[in-house]
Length: 569
Image 1 (cartoon, rainbow, N blue to C red):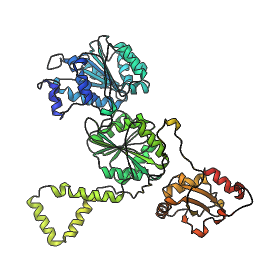
Image 2 (image 1 turned 180 degrees about the horizontal axis):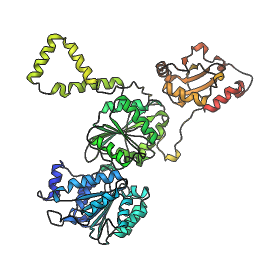
Image 3 (image 1 turned 60 degrees about the vertical axis):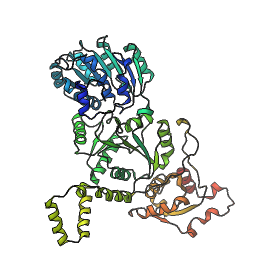
Image 4 (image 1 turned 90 degrees about the vertical axis):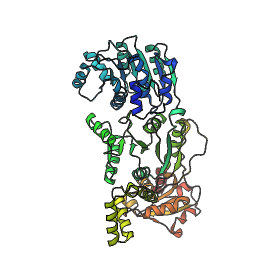
């Protein structure tokens, strides 16, 4: 990857970092037509755009010199939407310009502004920051911009979405008019195009399509899960793929806290990122992931914006993203700059149609399947043990002597079993999970999301099997809480439950015959609590339902039965 002469300090930095092949956006910003021009670039996250604009502004800052002049007032200003992204950009540009004598200073919300002001006073070549903090330093006179040659807006669409329009316009109005303006954005909505026309001059337009960059290195999987087994599925996915670093997304802070607690209890080294954490706590969590003290990060979308973690090979959507853009943003944390990654969407059967529409609108082809089973993971553990350095590393004389001593005292099977126990002792236990099966997704072709409707049959159209609950009207049995409990214990969906008959001391309900065996197996494993579910013999399974009646069908059932049916549907 030779954009500059081999002796150039940026070439040396790239070589030390192992950069050999340029990404599409890195090549595009250094095309002859883009030289010394304002740039309007649309590129997905993970496309290598930080290094791209670091390279693009190099000639603007350095000219033909091999080193930057001593640091004084900044020559370049990089504006990013979040603290995490700004700090990540700071790290990237620091190593890229290290051999050129570059001094990079960050100014972000949540950090001590007096310390930042002292750093600015000592001089900087490049300043990276968030819009609000940069504006604050400009207004207070701590950030001098009279010598500024380039301004980069990174993830401009995110900054507008987060409400930073006024801050961005203030910054752009304050900077010298003869500057270069490089605007990078995942998408180019009308607001971005309007801003580009106002603040850029004859900008060179670069578009790196999602097809080229967005999904090329990400394998998408959609995993069916039972309603009460989300956490178990996450545990097994983390064990199955064993990525050095994994990111698990939830939609709320409460969900993040709950899932992190479960993973810690199971033995995972897990940290969390959510809006309630201080900047210092967030920095500690990210550092633990970077230096290997933690392996799993559970996060909300807002907290994970812009973070780039080393060796992040797995993203799990424990809760479904709100839209295709969020799906792509989450997934884009992996599969970055040529590295492969896996993005797993957990899908309850009742939400399968929504998941299909989400994947379709994101232009993603996912592999559907069930969660990894405990047996799958045990087989993988055996394969991994056989490839472990414990067995493959060269033996020393001391190792061989101790091995012979052990064999003299113990049978080979005992020694092998001890090795297996030692290997497994540091691994979280796999969970027993059910694959709820493919269900009955709508087979209609894809339409706009507004036309999609969830199918809710009112009664069974095929054969069914009857079960009973040992609660009835005496214990205030009601379909509104019975149905979620049946789904949770039996690992089925509402659509697979038929009629519910609430009697005085018990409740009878029917289950679609196609899932009855699986339902029976699931409830048999539930620890017995206040409510017990049993399968009814055929002779006791509501024979009166098929008897002719003189009254209309709705009137034939007692009033409380009809109420139960209406509540369930």
